[in-house]
Length: 244
Image 1: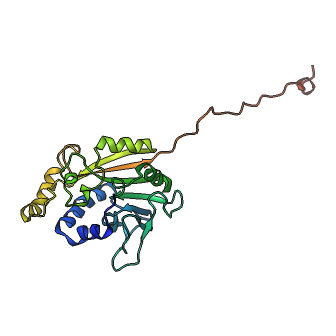
Image 2: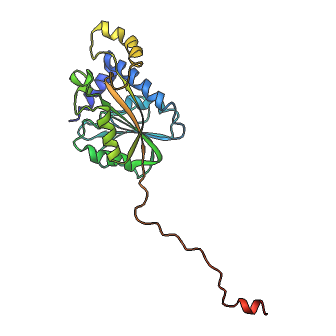
Image 3: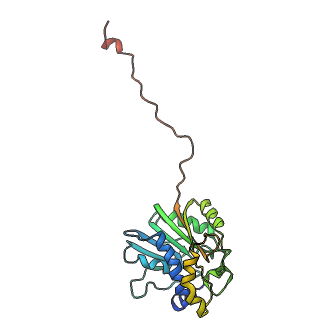
């Protein structure tokens, strides 16, 4: 079940807790992908808070928003790069994307397998995807006060297993959102300190969301490889070349 784009916009851009979420998750995204110079970067779901750092340097930025969620113009005050798209049929040519961010897209999709196939299709050679999903064992997936409380949360093992089944190779993983999903002033003020402490903990023990970076894996051709037999010198006329 996708959330409405207006609810997502209000959370991330008009609430103190949403801005704290942006800071925590974006810090991990930039740690994995510090730059995207000359690359084509796309996001699916509601990934626009993570795409903004790449607007100035990327060759092109595309924000794909699923039909059930709705679309909004983005970024504000600049030429729009957001487009409404079918979950499993994106208006992008095969192999055109260098970097893909999926946030609030996989866990809320009604067709996650087909969605992953579409992610694999649009990635080019050497392309990488970053999947940001709620942690099943975290507090954020248990609260419906934030967008991470909707859809199907994952464990790290479940997400990596699903990616492998769809020809992705998990490369790196991280966690974010160690602070509590609370709007109380005390917890909001303590959020920065809690985040710094939480990053020292093992990924699977804490954190409201997982971030898994995966590369596109291309299967080698099946069957027996036929090799050309080495050419042998014909000796039928050797006697004429070397008379006795």
